[in-house]
Length: 292
Length: 292
Image (cartoon, rainbow over all chains, first blue to last red; front, top):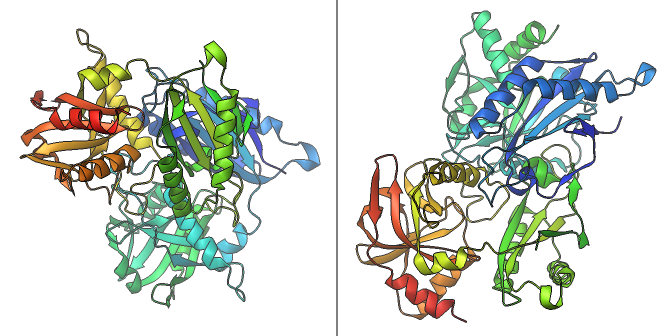
């Protein structure tokens, strides 16, 4: 199953060179899991997409995007060839036009909807857990854009380059360095390159405050809700990088990976490795939140 | 003269939906002035492009880009229809491929070179000066990306939206609000939405330090060199927003506009307006640096 893309509802392989997503990263995106021929957390993703577009001033018609998603699914192979799982990516850009950075007063958004195969190894990482590294490239700070899953993702690209460079050592299993943890300029933990992070520090489950930087993930929100319903307190706060040394459990999450326990965190700058002894909350959330 | 684009040296109107410039803003760009059928400061722009690509790990062949620029010029109308001036934009993206944010180990960069008409009113603004406003949207801070003219430009788009929203008042001349000044989260002046800024504060010419945020412009560098050659000291330093009230002269610059004196700075949050009494250094630099 190769990637399939609809652009404004029609199969297409290209966008105009005038697209503001290309020119300025002027847009947002969502990445959704498709499992057992169902899109997971579709309503939450569409809700975040709408809120993000409102914050950027990009008008969208949510019903129209829902129709385009339905059309994408109708374009997938059917019968025995029908994919049972995959990744659906929705990209909304501010379309074309305007004068330089200044957009048109009434921009005509462009919507790309893509179907990608589910990475083959993701289920295994949920079971076995992964190892992480600390990335040096800091996350840009800006409260006016924090939380949004916008198209300005050079920070994540640069941190992922560190990850790729470090993965090339021999003699490791395939869970070796599956994620990099990212910090703000002050050294506070923000997120993974493509995930949100939870950590049990001094017996207290916590996750980084994202009011200055980072992407506020749908799976993170679902976990916060689910833990609250379970009577498990999660503190959303600034977490200094040095506090990770006190962690007994770390797990990461996003809509496609679900929840991955972290077995080890490598700090290549000091050549030290933190081993996490516990996975209890990650396993409980996998069973309770993701089992349906 | 409508916009003309070459993609990897061939006339094209589109890029693949897999382009990492579109997906992540994973690339850089340059904007060059074309006047009297000459590209201004070409060597400096190509040098910055190369340095920027090296910092992001995007391999480029500078000779190849020079050939593509020559080809763009050869595609322009000739004879009496030949444009005498315009704007040349070079965009380099990391091309396609990779897994999510993680790029290929040896990415195949994509180069777009565009010719746009010179905005008709730019010469007038150089002569008459402009008015500016203070933008609320802050510039993202990240020393690892500061200075680069990368494709993550949502901050400039958002600030330009403020500018467009404020421009719509009636009864103003066309120099009304031609630029917005941008500040970091701490309130320090960084840049204009599409320009660098110089200010004479308490008798001292200064320009913002860009080690934490902002684009390090080619014209800014040319001005720093030129003023040094003239024996005029320019202090590159952190400039608090409140210091602007002490300014006697402000001017902005970029490669296409050249140097524009600022007549007035509007602060719509306090409904105050700063009038700059002096334009001496801007005029001197226009005559000395730009007159050739």
